[in-house]
Every structure is written in structure tokens, then in C-alpha cells.
Length: 330
Image 1 (cartoon, one colour):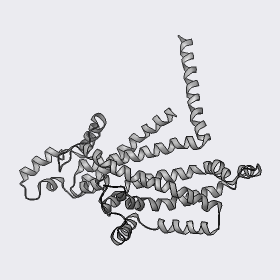
Image 2 (tube, rainbow, N blue to C red; image 1 turned 60 degrees about the vertical axis):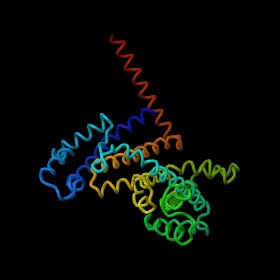
Image 3 (tube, rainbow, N blue to C red; image 1 turned 90 degrees about the horizontal axis):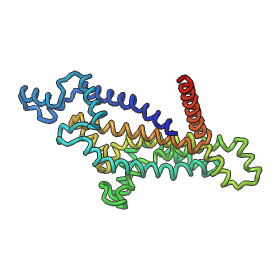
Image 4 (cartoon, rainbow, N blue to C red; image 1 turned 180 degrees about the horizontal axis):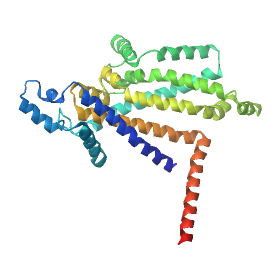
């Protein structure tokens, strides 16, 4: 298992380098000029040249990219903001708790409601409950989260006054944004759980479990669900990545001071270091989510877990044989 995790961590390196290269290229060829964004347009050519040299923008593209990657790898330094002159890492650490809290609660809502709805829909196929869940899933899946967020604000904040529209001071502030982010993924998870459960409940071992006299709940929760969770976990991991990376609009609608708002501010002010740092942080978070999903596979499916340990034993035996051979040669 440890060897598998280390191998996956090594795979993250080219992914992150590729993400940085893409964002670096977009920034480089963007028509917006960070020098004018910081100093304004009424500056002399001398002032422009001095400020551009301070920012390091006079260097060739590949040199800028190599220097940035070098300082990130060797010093864990994401640079300093062009606008407020503060370290980028400090601003990210100030904003990331709000984004991570928003994403965690939204994913929890998705899991708590999506999986049970899918199970009920599968075990009561073609019933009124099944049709209700299917229609509800299609309804929420067809709604963009920004539109849903606006509708929640209009109905529950402005019209009914049940929840505040902006801020993060109390738990009530988190209800509407978390619902706006979590309701649409519920439909995807419910549909995937339903299709996976329908495939599993038709297997021979499920009929064998019923023939042994096991209760319906025991068969569903202990035998069927565990074997149906692999595709569901995959979808949940994908949804978690989408929620974390796509919370920009929701944070803007509800006034949440998270990474999404920070990125929008950085883009509007052409603050390259802040843009690069925010994108890098989100990319690392998405990679870690995928790693956690791969590790969860081993705990859910014993076959995958056995594969991990089998590979480790093979490597260990090969190492012992090599050491014995070298010792015999000596």
C-alpha cells in the first residue's frame, strides 16, 4: 500500500508541471498587462520598464517558467502578489478553510442523500419511489449550480427570510451555498448507485444470500452495496474535485471569502503570482482527492487490497533473491 501511494505521488509531478505550464502560457499570451494593472495607464516608459523588471516579466517565457517551478520546488515559495505585495501562500492559507469547509459539507450532503436514494430506487425498481427519485435526479442535474444558488437566495433569503444571503458568521450562512453545490451531485450519485445496485442484485451470490434466509437489509447493506460502491466512489471523487474547483461562482453569489473569490480578484487585477498559486493549490487538492479515492478502493474491494499486498510481497521476495545472489557472488 505504501509503495502504491508513493508511486501515485510521483505521478502527480508531471500533472502539476503540466497544469503550471498551461496556466503560465495563458497568462503569457493574455492581452492584459499586469504592469498597467498595478501602476495604471498614465505612466512613463521608464516607469513601465522598471516595474516590468521588478516583476521579472522582461525575461523569456521558458526562463520565467523554470524560475517559478524552481522556487516552488526548492523553497515552497509561491511568490508575492503584484497588487498587495503580500506572500501568495499566506493569502491562500487565509482563504482555503472557507473553501474546504464549503466543499466538505457539500460532499457530505451528496453522500448522505445520494447513496440512500439510489439504493431505495434500485430495490424498488419501477415503483412510485423509483420514478420520484429518477425525476428528481434529472431535475437537479439539469440545473446549473449558479442558477440554483440564485433561486435559493431569492426564495429562502429574500422572500421567506429563513437564511441569510451572504456571510459565514453562523451555521445558517452555510445552508444555502452548501445546498447549491451539493444538490446537483446528489442526482449523479443517486443514478450511479441505482444502476450499479441493479447490476449487483442480479448476481448469483445475491440469490444465494437470499436462499440462506438472510434478511433483505443484511443482503443489501453487507453484500450488495459493498460490491456496488466502486463506481459510486469514483463518481463521488469526481464530484468532489468538481465542487472544489467549481466553487468560484457560488462563493461570489453568497459572498464567501474563499479561494474562488481570491481567484476572481487575482484574474480581474491580472495578478499572475496569485493566479498561479491558487491554481496550483486547487490542482494539488484535486490530486490528493484522487489518491484518497484510490486508497479507499482497497478498503472497499478486498480483491484490490489483495492486489496491493500481493505486489508488495512479490517485490519483497525479489529483493531477498537479489540480496542472496549478491551475497553468493561475494
